[in-house]
Length: 195
Image (tube, rainbow, N blue to C red; front, side, top):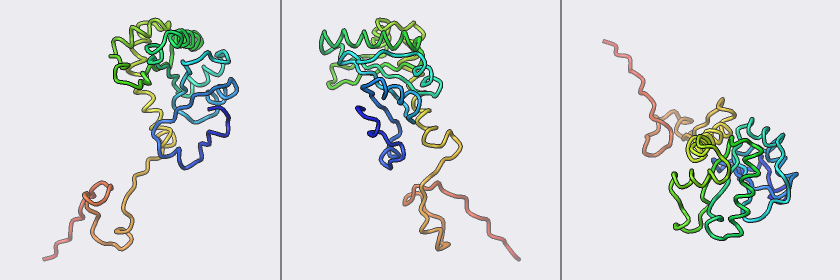
């Protein structure tokens, strides 16, 4: 994101996605992403030196809201200068958030840039994460992002909508078949037997 008008949470396009991630490029946008925007992931740029420093207040605000910070490692595999930026930016973030709500991902462009979870946890030690936080960065934090995305779409878990076929119910016909509609099958009513 290079400007704040790029993100409009009321736009219908955003409702089509399960997870929303932003990569802010300025300190003002980073602060807005941490405190205001209804998102799931804040991606930290690792291909260049960040033009701002992380501050503890917005980072803690994002952690309290359930937003997760993503650090990708594939740029460190590609180039030595990007390796310096990746490690420097990750250390800066992890010092600010104390290792909480950090997710380490690949952002790989080729299959050779992918690494196993144990390799990623060892790489996370270079970023300054503790052993416990390294394991959480590739397992439970990823699950919490999915749950946060689900609660964001369901109004904090209060409302859940399911698409159903309303054409058949308007005409009071037989209940919709599960092969033709996405609605769950309903129970049949017992017919009253009169003898």
